[in-house]
Image (cartoon, rainbow, N blue to C red; front, side, top):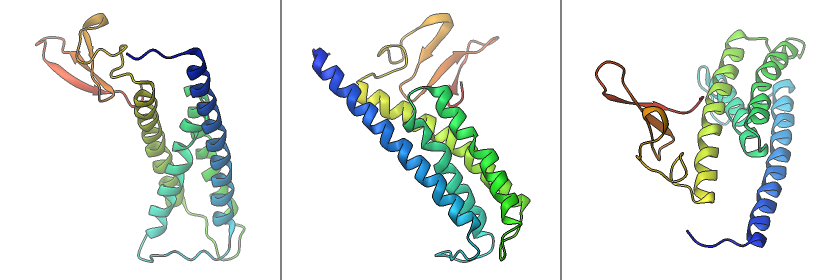
Length: 179
């Protein structure tokens, strides 16, 4: 492993802090943009076919839920920010009922929730891969790839872990998206 001086560590931390601040701004601007589009009486989609708006809802809320993982250093803060997109989507759907030319839709709320769930999963996965590559770590247990670790678990570079089965001692892969 190359020797890293204190100045290089500080520079790396400053870059990370600046990147977090930029992503927080992008997240807030994205929330404002989605709110504007949700409450605008006339929205023109580039593609128009049956239920395309559900895809747009899912993609928008996927983005809104994934960005906080890059805007906040602490996982709990990022998860809270991402989960707050659920009540935002519900509130905007109710508000659409009061806008001429827009309709309240439960299926849009479901599309928003699906987007948030996918965004949390994607945001956590991408951040774990991004920060791991940046810091030079290869695996979860300080660079041990496939090496035995505590309690019969083995780290895997892909972001999960191999867990020994109970009765037959077979190994099964458990992705670590939520835990």
